[in-house]
Length: 295
Ligand code: C2E
Ligand code: MG
Ligand code: MG
Ligand code: MG
Image 1 (tube, rainbow, N blue to C red):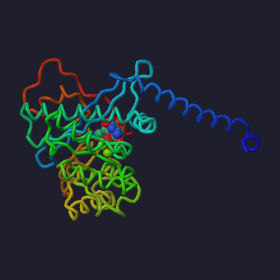
Image 2 (cartoon, helix red, strand yellow):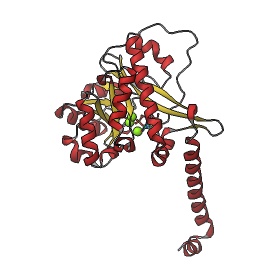
Image 3 (cartoon, rainbow, N blue to C red):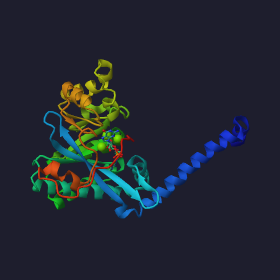
Image 4 (cartoon, rainbow, N blue to C red):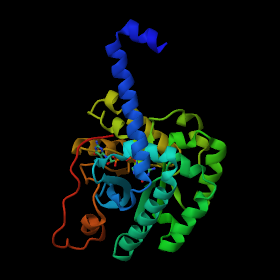
């Protein structure tokens, strides 16, 4: 078939296609191998979630960063799926959770609101791990963080296999840990089983927030998700808020919490310290990460 295709399409087109597939596979394999020894090349940034009516930070989402010594910064949108396939995410995910819990405990101790929470991304593979529940409980115990200070973000793809997901989510919630569905509306068939899922929060994907432009058409999906959240008594969080107009529209539609570059970019714990604890900034704070891209 390849020979036939290359003749028919011309060797050029076929070869270019073939090479880009090979490049992709090579880079994936390289990154998978490099991840095994990434160690402290990996770090975590925190992005505040704010109460849209008061503007105060109520939580932080932890976001992984990988700075490779020769390849430079690599987006989690690229390496997290690779780490899921290789299994490296098990260990990395535990470290992120551990760091998030310790950091939020430190912030609460330093004067943050006692209800301040960490919102931590969990990959489908972690959720399927039979040891996941005990891992999470162990991390909470060691860090001294209360279960109500932790929200786990899962995507719709993670709950496709309901027979595995529902018992784990139920057990986590029985312990007081809350569950958010991340990027809500972008996956498959979440609506189909949403009413049966043990969840607390819907995160409205940034692609829907970006459509807000003051028209009914632009607000259609966002408004429907917020309404759904109200009916099911879930908290809604708007993601990827970049303009004051988007924030105002979300709030007018009944969305409680927002997250996005408008409020703060993902930043180091030290940089966020003053905002979260209310203490004055120390000297030599570094600026938050540059950027403007959405994966
Ligand atoms: P996500 O969980 O949906 O995270 C939100 C993404 O939107 C983050 O991208 C964040 O930096 C970006 N963002 C925040 N505000 C804005 C904004 O106003 N405008 C735009 N354009 N983008 C904004 P990031 O950090 O590159 O992460 C990408 C994805 O990688 C995450 O999407 C999540 O699915 C995954 N990820 C990141 N950290 C982890 C982790 O620790 N574990 C797992 N399993 N996945 C992670
Ligand atoms: Mg997330
Ligand atoms: Mg998201
Ligand atoms: Mg996402």
